[in-house]
Image 1 (cartoon, rainbow, N blue to C red):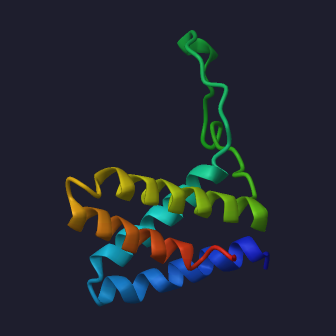
Image 2 (cartoon, rainbow, N blue to C red):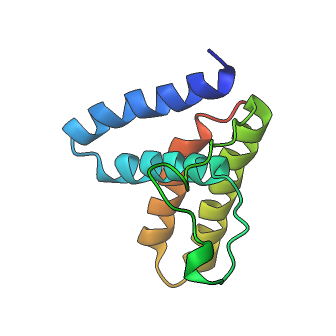
Length: 116
């Protein structure tokens, strides 16, 4: 099992107890991290408008294999999430300090999965 898969499995495993214990902030952060990973693995599309008769037809005709992230790619994705949440916290620190603290706490949850 790759390092990237191990990190994803750890996040998923940590999500269940957080949900059971109703840790909303932790659940939100872990779900966000999993969503960011899933989005990074999505295959880029060459979507364009066209005639309907040119559309793919049949079961599985539009399926594509997901990209496999390396451990370094996964760390970059998670670090980008942390950076995004910390930036949002800094932007709203003056007007909504309690919200900013919540964002920082959630960024710390994700940061725990990023090796330093």
